[in-house]
Image (cartoon, rainbow over all chains, first blue to last red; front, side, top):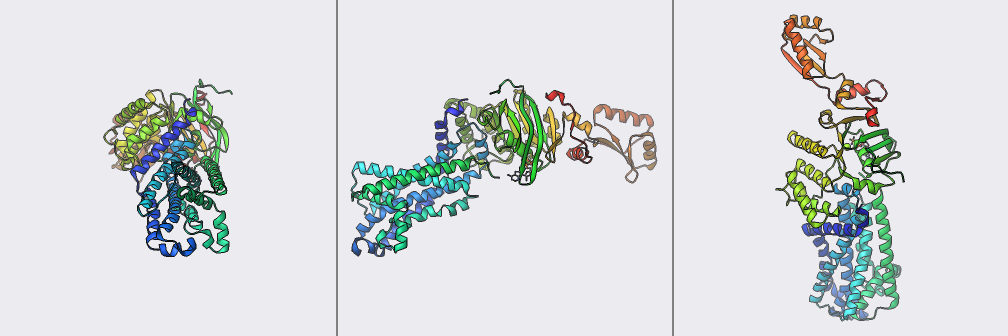
Length: 264
Length: 324
Ligand SMILES: Nc1ncnc2c1ncn2[C@@H]1O[C@H](COP(=O)(O)OP(=O)(O)O)[C@@H](O)[C@H]1O
Ligand SMILES: [Mg+2]
């Protein structure tokens, strides 16, 4: 039985399947990409003056606000694409071919891993696009190559964590619409962090939540890496710990859900 | 472990039970299918056929009982069972978003065929199932019959020894149905064991070596098509008369006939064989009786169910020996 020994090949096969889907039907990915792009332009060109009030004692100029905003938008890009994963996993579970996969001697996890790997790749591509737009409108990072690498690594970790959670959400949702609803917190969390406005500018109770939720240490670390403002060990460790923890949690949850008997 | 691959039974299940809530779907069924034969599980909608296929193909678990496929236990050795079987479920199990060819190559990859071998097998199967022309089109654009054929072609990629086909012809037009029958016959001639479910007695009759009738969660009869039909009194020859005198004459002479005086028809129990028909015709000729119409009625599933479930007969087994 060659089957049991080849989970790696199954993962690649399922990854290919998911990339093929994404290539044939790019509209879901593109729609999700639209949100961070529009928000970036909106925040900078329309609300910029108001939003920047909390930065630099209220004296921030546009360039400063762009510098503050882009890392947050990058994070939003990651969470938007993971919402797409929740939807496409839920869609995939309604497909007849799932029953076929379940009766084949393949690595079962590969069905999910294919989704995750595909999403992470799409996320990284989306990040490059959004970053390009950021550079075009005046984002001026001063990261060293090593810091760029670390930033990319961090984004990959975040993407892995959110995507595994999204897979779990997709699996527990009865249909794609449900997945989209259940997955909304993934997209809301960046807004409730220091991604768009500094935590100091928030009301007290809200500030407490914003400070302790996973996105805040991630965003602060990303800012530190890209803008050279120093990353602070505490934030970096917290960020990585959150990502690894959520990845493990999401993976175990998803796997358990997928191993349950298929619903009709 | 006591498993052997030399088990002469491709499928051996005893006492399978499954309930959903307080609805008992399978109430202890036994199935024995010798390797290299076609077995048909016959039953109306909702009888539990898909549930049985689901259990035997490791898709769902039974609440009770045991099943071994190719000698492996469906629960303890599910992965080994999966390596031995191919399943074409009741509902299309193709990936509609990608092309027929991509579906086939996906299967080849999941069976760990080399790229070259995968391409070869894909091309050969697409050709065999008359899908070469549609190979580059998304599977979602296929007609019902084409989807079914692709479904089966995908099932065959790994050359499974045992194949499950859950209602392979339901919803197909007569032409596609006959194509499907031909496909199934070819599979069998290649030595594959086929487990087929159907709602049509005719289909089981055409294809299966052995048939089991599933009703109310139990196997109410099993045996060859011939054996089953003998259990069923539904087969008859009907003679219709327009002349009451001829009708009367025939009715008195034909003792075993059932009369319908209003319609002037007589029903004579018959298996519809050439021999029996000739006997009836000879007899009519000899007696100088001319019927206006003679029609042959073979038992259908309704007759089977009427016969098997109307009276509280215990589960009948026409010949248990051959299954052992
Ligand atoms: N997952 C399920 N949950 C609840 N009831 C089910 C489920 N699967 C099947 N059933 C019920 O079990 C019975 C048998 O279903 P099924 O095996 O699909 O029959 P068949 O394939 O012979 O038409 C039906 O009454 C069906 O409603
Ligand atoms: Mg069914």
